[in-house]
Length: 297
Length: 343
Image (tube, rainbow over all chains, first blue to last red; front, side, top):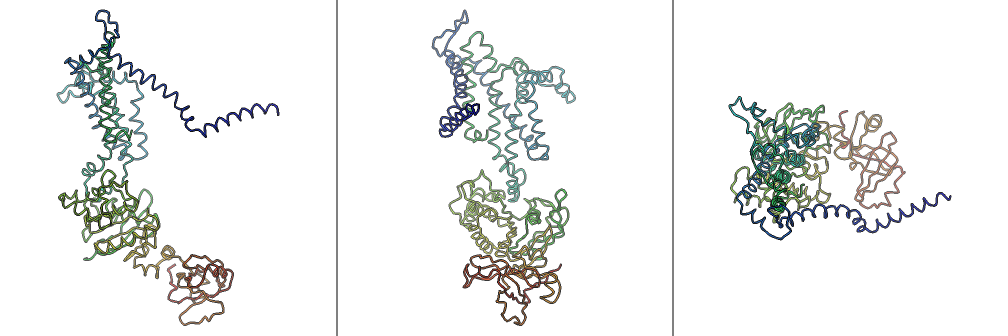
């Protein structure tokens, strides 16, 4: 009897607590969300804020020490220096090209995995698409470095046609990034195509539409939001990348490289450069919000 | 042969190991409201999909208006379908949905709009053109699907259980409307349903499907009054079989007979039994089911077997009919209503 008492009392406390939480959903929600919200606010938004603020500082040109004096010189330089402007435009161009290539390759692949392949093979194919994501990023990029090297696989395969591989440079960067981010484009399109009711395709054919017409008028408009959703990944991941371009890009410079090379010498300038992709991605998200893509993420 | 909208010959189709359609021959006349009735899995929907061109038959031949279309794609056939789940395009407005078939046939935009609006008016959906399918109720979507299929004036309209998803009231209202629209436009309707009442009320002729085959084709009255097989007798209406010994004792010859419950009169046991042309049997009322407008009596016959009799509640109430339970009665019906079925 006596040994039972503390347990009963303990259970009573737990019950009371559970009851209180049940009756007060707001308290429950607060307890659940406090820790993750703190994490998000302090570590994520906090560092973004530090980045933004430090972009307005300057450095001592002799010692490379950061001088906390408020100035817009860095942003001024960003907009007036031709090199910076070129690099920003090139980076956005690369991100757009990678996104477009991913969409072009992903659509037929996803169409096959979602609608053509036998249903019992589909999960395996999806796993196959995801497998490259398990391999190390660096391993994959170095693999591409080997493929694209002089006398490498690309050269060897193109030689019979009298061609040679692209070598290292901008095209190689776009190619490698396309390979890296392709799964992020295939998956949302695969899901959208899989959920597309077969009845809609029948209905379109029934009303006289040939397959090409059905694709343009029914499949594409219904899957487009998912393409946009996938492009959020491919675009932002490409825009932020700076390793691939160092390994296969030859002398090509992207925003990431500029940030990387400025970090030691001119941290505030690196911060100012770092705000560019953030701003571009915010603009990109605002633009594609209209397609309804953010609802299908 | 003229006057035939659809002719099916020796149609067979199997999926994997199961045979869905097992040798179907049918002729559907121009302008007819033709129903394909049967339980789920009886092959009626597969026949519809074969006619529409969504499936190709393993064997057999399909003719539309005298032209063979067996191997043509759906977009090459002059038939339109109203799908069970409506299959409206969610990214288009109601008007765009209805005009879709016209757009594909490159009909000028102005004419397209006029015809789409007219089709929406036909199904009583004026003013709904700018809405999205998601903003409509089930009955409204059903009518959009109908307008979309009708606007191109196909030779044949195929309807795949189009009323299945609607509630009872709406379904009855749509039955009347569908029939009226069909009469108005004069297009051949092929209507797939598992609801025998729906088939009986709407159709000019009915084909009853049983395990991938056509068990009987006929007018609603023929199907109901003269069922060709025990399956048709039991699937269309309440089956009321008199078999074996009991049948022999009452009718004088062995065999299986079907008598519709409403053809049987429930009389007092002592009532005169020798009206000319009538058969009679005595028994005990085992169960009484009060249905509101009518009462169903389940009577165990003295000679063996059980018959159901349906009586209109002209003057009786639920309390009156309940008193019949366990009492002795005499059942009487005209001999021509006992339909002999092939065993």
